[in-house]
Image (cartoon, rainbow, N blue to C red; front, top):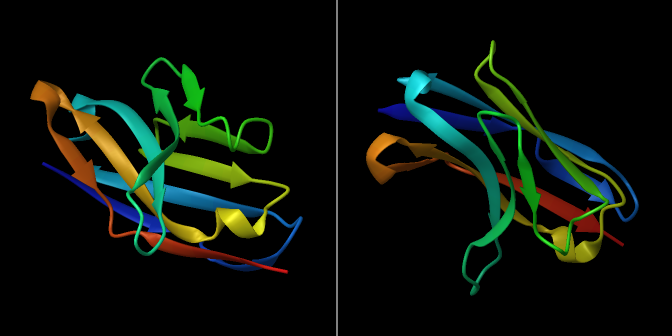
Length: 116
């Protein structure tokens, strides 16, 4: 089992930056991949970025060049540095862990609001 806790969300103006953090606890040694997803009301949760245990990264086209995902294995933490934020980045951001045997774990989410 894995528990994930996100932090770092908040209100920021267009063009600003935020850094999200997700801290994992529990059986973290079995985590293969950590990622960020986001969701707005009435829409499906969508992929933002993820990072493997070997630090290979993937990004959604909508955030490439603006967001950076990184991982600190010693602290069992994954970060999402978000720069040049746009109003369309407003969402609840969720951390997800891919665990052994295909199991997925989610955090409770953190709200990011980008105002114009």
